[in-house]
Image (cartoon, rainbow, N blue to C red; front, side, top):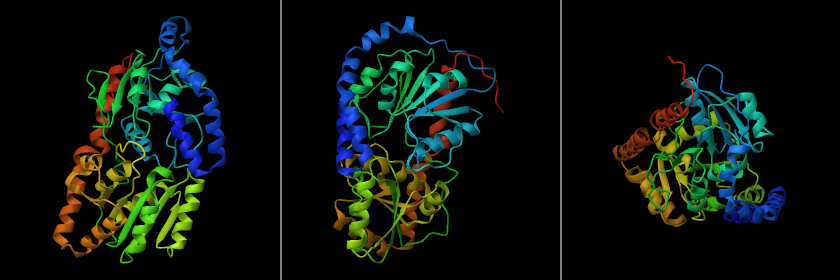
Length: 398
């Protein structure tokens, strides 16, 4: 937890967001206490039998899954939306417990609970609790420890921590950890580990023919780790293209947003900056774009940024900051750059490519997404695990 507090403090300091700074201060006050609790995890394990909450069994009917996450439905976290949408189509009953409301709310597809996790579990009667982020599982370990319910955790890049993972694995009720392929520093084996790639919502991200050949897109949360200034710098160099930057508001991004807008104005406003673009409009933008220029500051694990998989699924050419992780993610479907000048050169080269070469590059992205990232590819294994972990007989679904 200490490493997460330090990272949040860094975001708060750089963003200048008052509420973020205050939150970081409160976290720091409790950081040592949380660290001491982590040392005492063994004692928590031994208390489980006498502190277990009375959890009523789920009623007859379909599989019931409670998702515990930070701020659903936050626009920048489309991977959670994609997961929920696909599971609903399979007949799974889902509700969500959130730890804070989103600043850029999207479209909620299921009931949302706030406040007490115990009250939420008592009212919904889930078969499974599914947690997004390692850090959230640790924050709620005391409460989760009191339920006689299997827990699965979907890990993401930004809060990946080998030490935190090992502490969580001491809890027997954590049945599965779903890791992004290749992110862990040491290989993990055994029934509690599974590899799961970034998941694309196929209802919004798919190829279409009417594409703007000069549209360059970047989408994501407004965070200091994204190196968003580089996108503006490249736009100022390549006036042959039209650049759109779609940013989702978050709790640490006020200063970053002001800085990016000021930088854009200083360079003659080469970028159309849009805030809090709704899901459907974001899908249209990604399908229309010719190039997706992803920026990255190397200040956190690369993971598998969902926007890159979404771009590939649309046949939008991905231009990525060069790294081993980026090349492992996009492979020969991507183009790679070192800095702003190099990204500008890659965009110029694209203008000079013949139609067949461009079409081949787009098709590579579509095929890579089809094989590794579409929801119909990534989600069945998760659903199979949930059904196996469920302690009661389930009704057959059509």
